[in-house]
Length: 428
Image (cartoon, rainbow, N blue to C red; front, side, top):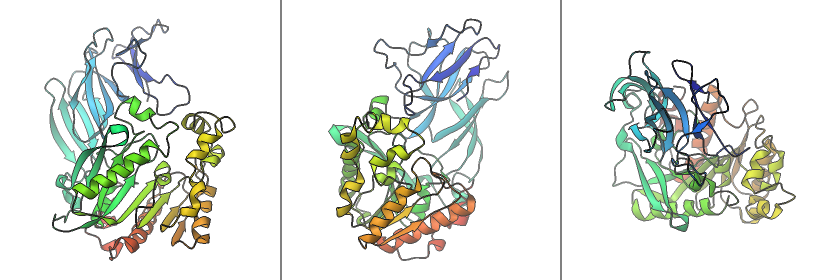
């Protein structure tokens, strides 16, 4: 994120991390009050223990028209909110309060140098883009335009979405999202689509995605559940950091407890015919409690992490280099348990993925085939860790839905779901 200068050009606000080579470290809001004195750097909400008094990570900054306040975006509990605070760290004694709490902020800017109102852009689980005017003096907003008429043009509605909290590992509260089909009725049962995010320091947000879009699975006839387990962002830095050296520990327990919570509290969810899907770390975390699995650019062996182009990553996640911390690398290594693999799996791995090279996916598929487990391998030669090209995205979704539908009990043409892939318009 680029630094932001005040309107008079004399001050600059920016964010920085403390830890070197830790991509999920907390971003701290900083201020240089006079650019002629670059050695004078002030931190907002600085605390004696060094952790900082505000436990969220700013991702965007904007100055008010009179430079007296800052507006910052920061993730909290599955949304990106907009916050307001004094532009002087000395005056920022009270923690900031959000001035926009709905959906996920994707952009914001003052309307002009004289108009204090903000133009904000948001997205949600049902809407790819919504544009509003927000008055930060009153926190009142007015919608200008919605790309999908708040989901209506896609056949989607806010009533399909909800969230819940449950007790996870070590008694911690863990958050998850739910998205139901637009044709949902509580008297019916729908197979579970258990979506596991990658990162591992990431989160499912109330936002639109052109890659992993829960609406696709909901409209194909599933109840999609998106959990933010230990290691997720937006729930405090300590919660994020608790995944270090715990890849298959605390987060996995959270996933199990979430599954149990669904089984006991959501009678409309068919967990017996559920499927699990994940990418990267999310692919690493898929387990055997499901009818079928989808692993996109996942991890076959944690011992292979040193084939990545991001060497800082395994050093941080596993506590050091492999020759010093081999036990940690081996403890959560999926390859150790290949003798127990039994669940049908779709393996997707892209040739240009240098974060997790294609050999990870090939090894995974070879094991599945050798063990005579129903499996399929899909490779995109022109994609990296993500599938970004339009035609490839269409193929990806057809492959994924076609595979999981065979095992979940949904017997339908994936191109004739309640909302078709073409109509859902993932490219918006």
